[in-house]
Amino acid sequence: MKGNEEAIALFLVCLFSIAAAAAAIDRNKFPADFLFGTSTSAYQIEGGYLEGNKSLSNWDLFTRIPGKIVDGSNGDVADDHYHRYIEDVELMHYLGVNSYRFSISWSRILPRGRFGQINQNGIKFYSNLIDALLDKGIKPFVTLNHYDIPQELEDQYGGWLNPQIQNDFGYFAEVCFEAFGEKVTYWSTLNAPNLVIKMGYMKGEYAPGRCSLPYVSCPSGNSRTEPYLAAHNVILSHATAVDIYRKKYQRKHGGFIGIIMAANWREPFTDTPMDRSAASRALAFEVPWFLDPIIYGDYPPEMLQILGSRLPIFSIEDKQKLQTKLDFIGVNHYTSLYAEDCLFSQCDSQSTLEGYGFAYTTGEKDGRFIGDNTGVNNFYVVPSGLEKMILYIMKRYNNITMFITENGFGQDGSSNPSNEIRKELLNDRKRVEFHTAYLSSLLEAMRKGADVRGYFIWTLMDNFEWSNGYSKRFGLYHVNFSSQERTPKLSAKWYKEFLQSSAELCTKADGDVKPKLVAQ
Ligand code: BGC
Image 1 (cartoon, rainbow, N blue to C red):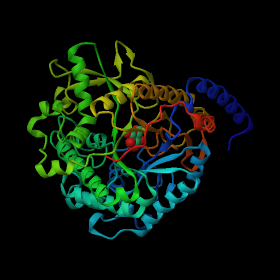
Image 2 (image 1 turned 30 degrees about the horizontal axis):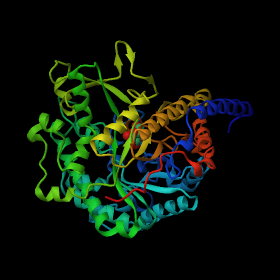
Image 3 (image 1 turned 30 degrees about the vertical axis):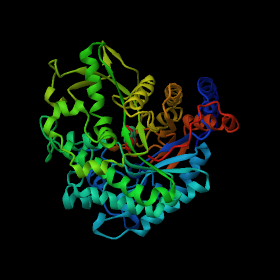
Image 4 (image 1 turned 60 degrees about the vertical axis):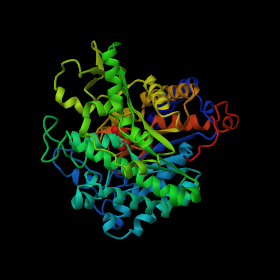
């Protein structure tokens, strides 16, 4: 618990920062029905890794491989949200958010994938969570898969590498639509598959930890071929789930379904045609890699040119399946980097840049960074990048509806910080500045016509940050991982003020109110 002095100091800083922030950005500039929320994911917060008949996920195993997680930690307990979800819903209620984005642990619902029973304990957990949210007027925004898959699927057939996963994913999705669909309006099939594939099959830094030289050395994998095979199955798994939703549930439940992409901006290193085209290749090897097939039925030309026959082909049947498309795109945006040409120019480690469209990315130019540093390597503060990214997606995909499903600021901090460091972590003025600047950038994009319907801060509370373990903190709430105590940071107070100040203004919002989101 905080001492009095600390509380007063925090309050004063809070007032000052909130006043400054409020001057910059207003909730009432956004449409009244705009979703404002926080995001989390199952493996990063739930813990209870073997409780209620849950089976092991591929992350449960991956975190056990020595050297994979910087602090040697794992998500066995994480934020213990499995036992504390009621308290966590209260935290959100305090903030005043109208939506909460979370993911479902596949191995909690189907411990053995398609090969076993539906786990009623798992169903109950998420039903209770959804009811608790709805009770407080918070709309669930559910991601079916945020990185973790049942280990059984890796063991039986190699997970995403095998086309069999398309049926498994469809089955999992259907179990969830059936169990929760009446109460859920927003579904996302997958979170940031572009990141999962690159980190899991090219660099070996995420589960299932596969890669090969000249990229990186792993016990097994092939960095030049597997990412494209796995991505192909991810794309068709998305289509399988959407197909089921469209045919059996959408009309009945009146909801919407989309996919979420890691969408960081790439700025040409120099204003030359070569670097401009490097930046556009770098972008194509991220978001369009997945969205061009889903929306237009095939891989982006930028990828086809470089990878040729290494990209799998969509059969006529696959293309048929891809007709189901999506209702919205979720955008996870954190930063921007420069992109430099390595297709026509000679670069170091050129062969490992193939998977990035032969574009070398860096945050530094002429000894200066692209934006202020955060506590996370290569995550710089570049608010204008969000507007550019949104306008890029808007243009490429004909102004499809978007949600900013993640935007956040990471602090550097150990799992067990000293009191001094803890004080600094709580006084996260830089995070407040980050969000106010990024929200202004979002507004600019909306003023230019982008159809954005919501903004979710990553993340509700400090949690397990994948290969960074507990060493990076993105939360609005500080978590003491020994006692599980949650303490609001300055940013939590700012978010609450930001959302509250608009409660009355909201009804007379001067925002560009759009017609209702329509299913495609
Ligand atoms: C992921 C989150 C992660 C965040 C910060 C996002 O792309 O979806 O799970 O915590 O990045 O690294």
